[in-house]
Length: 212
View (cartoon, rainbow, N blue to C red):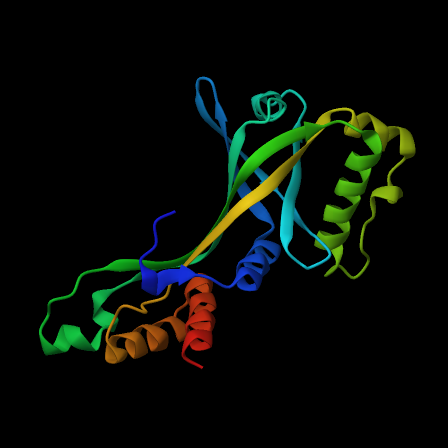
């Protein structure tokens, strides 16, 4: 990941929080014939000190990504946060000198490391149950894996392969107009706060965090 110094996310807790808020990753593995990608939910695991050590997810057993993961290949998991177009019309400097162009504000976290595959039924059940419980929390009546018949769950577990990414590096970018003059940043914040685009309003909250 390339990020100008002004946009780099250096806080590990902040990057882990984005991962946990987004859940969904684009997982890219390096195969012999080039990169392959899978779009899957992933959960993170921490060590006793709170450091993120692994990411877990799963794919269909017939997915080529599963076979590549079994070789211990290199992998990249990309978690995309909110993104929004920035019109030059929001900049104070547009009215001052006009030397402005459009851009895009966004947040993302990249996690790299080696990946491994596993098919242990107990480990797969634990992973699927954990992902389900996490995603069902907001529901009035949360669904649990145990609500489904045991033989049905066993059949589905036999159809997937677990993936575990051993984290070596986490990098993040939060491009929130930090490189613009104060008047331009204020214009972007105001524009995003009142935008009909939910993602823009989400980024406005992030901009406010940076200036608070």
